[in-house]
Image 1 (cartoon, rainbow, N blue to C red):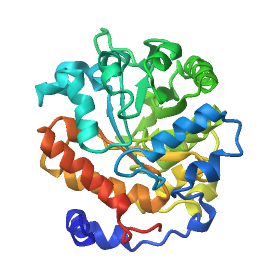
Image 2: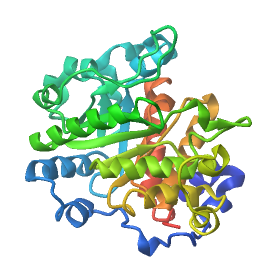
Image 3: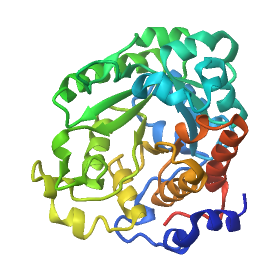
Length: 352
């Protein structure tokens, strides 16, 4: 896809997003993605040789292979949002094999899904595309509704099916978060021992994060701190929602922050808000991948490209996009994922 097509998909936001120069954290301060990302940023860490091998497999696979960027297909929504709600728009994805086929057809770096989905096809596909096994989930069958992450299997089971990495979610801010931090930290330690990479879904969750009609779950300051805790427990890659606002700490009136976070280290530009997320990933030493979000219908392709532009220009490492792709016919899903990849392959979309 040409730069003109990217501009067309961005519409009236094209100039605002493509010509912005960040003056909060300069691009020279960020450890940026590149072909040597694993060698440059992981070689001197405590990761063992097997972890380095699997990190290189992740970053070296698919259409974005050896660029330092990641395009991952995540399909754990059958648990997180219910199978009917997730797969009714395109029922072929009730079959786990079609999930993996979509990732392969789209030339993704990896496919992330549940134990059950990946176990059903592991012998056929684990050597063809990196598997990321999501080891914990929230489910929506409980009544009254609960919002907690429960382990659905062991790290050893993921390793036995040939997984390249394991993924997990922590609901930072929730009453259950400290238990989840312990569970996931221990699971990630075991994953590293076995040689697998680790990806953390760093989500915030607390009803008090909504104040005066504004939802601060995706504020830059709160998600940034979630990222910082995520890299503290040594996640290799951080998955985070794109920030939509700022001032979670100040408006909800809790925790600790500093006025400079809002006056010098961020602006209202979404690229600068996302760069604050990158900065909290040890200035990009651990890659930030933003999520694609829910399907919005006809705007999905333009929305996905916009998210990719913001992530890339902020210094992020890619996109993990699911519902915008698998809730459509497979050919259309492949087209949307490839459009996202085009952003990361484009020399015209530069670091702000």
